Length: 167
Length: 282
View 1 (tube, each protein chain N blue to C red):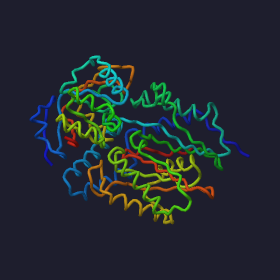
View 2 (view 1 turned 180 degrees about the vertical axis):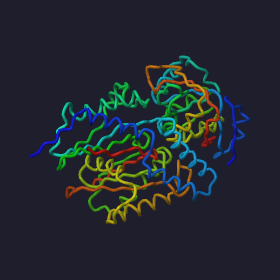
View 3 (view 1 turned 135 degrees about the vertical axis):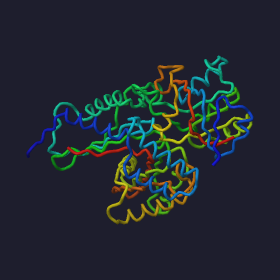
View 4 (view 1 turned 60 degrees about the horizontal axis):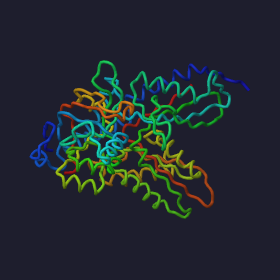
């Protein structure tokens, strides 16, 4: 098992050095977005409105963390099922998103889009959220606090363990 | 008839303790099976995955961080003795109050929306819990409490079979369900199968089957079939977190009920490896 330690944003060379099944220890800035945030991002992009963060080379983690207990950086954190984001992902990939992190299989359309745009889909282990919480350096609500766990959180991660699923 | 009065406050306290116990630890049989699997596993990636799952169980307990960020829908099967009176509040209210309190104090994720379609607004406290009430003989109150995550629940299925369907056809439907779920349901899975009753009863049986003990106590026609289905699933190659190998199903549990001459309802409810449940008796 090959293990890559990579810093976000990923360069084209870094993405092309990956192989399916490799492990990646990911560090840097991620934005979380799950169902509700994807609906909003998608409709903003469709209407031609600028979204409030740089999508070019961005990394998005399909995730809704649990609340942060006192004395900790964040609560339990882990991937949700990526397939629910399939209807939104092609537009986001076309607008420059490079890295998606989630769990489970993606549609053929999304797989082709990832391939064509030299993006990457990484999976994180599901249900190991106390472990993944250890890789979070900071976690702050970035957009749409009213969505609760479905808000966009800005995360800084250090060595978040992921596996390469689609290239 | 001697009536037994159980104060609402006592039920509330027990439920609160129960939610605390399941948020940070899976069924101990899951841990045992993962420990066994990691010893047998030869593949480097899968060994890494199994070790991560075991470390997670350790860290969740040590740090009081939920095993999974999806702290689920609270599902309660209540068995109320016919001589029991809960004094102070209806059981549904007691459960909801305890759940709201646990959600705040244990920093559980609020995952329940007040409306499924037109007004998907979060209730903010995981309420309401889902309660299945059963009246039984006696003076005890038994509560089977589970946190059921959304990922595995989404991949569950129900089919109204023709009554002449063979066990093999049902087996195929179960296999198809597990295959369609793939890594989405977070395998290794506990698989609850409900057969018979009617449309809603088979679904409820499948849910209830998830919370039967993982290790089988006695051999019956159904338990032999459970083992056969489990073996078939474990040969599917889906494996831990969809990474291949021999461990896809931790257990297959079947529950049955009488049914109509025209029917053969079958429901398959999937449960992820974060198998969080407890039974309390009062």
